Length: 147
Image (tube, rainbow, N blue to C red; front, side):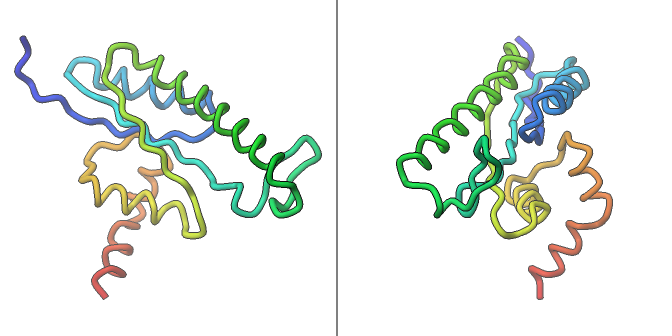
């Protein structure tokens, strides 16, 4: 039995299935020689606060009756669950956790940086997140928290 500790690899994905699978596959390939678990950070937008997407375009949520709004919410939820199932299936026997991150009014960068700090992440797989880190956003947010 291998006594190496299992390392958590955080992979940030959105609703673009092609890009998400590509990022996840890269992470699995990169760390395939050591015991890992994957934490999928799925970023969603809380679109039902103000707007809903319909076959007729984007409409204000308050212009749709509650029953139809609930149908649209369930449809979106099913779509996200199918997407997450594809991500989990790609991981095969590698243990997977899913952490859903909803985007509200604050910039997504702040939410991600708060997660990085709060969860003590040290390995993150997403080019956009790496750019955020390389642009010293962490330092800027930490400086704001200290003030």
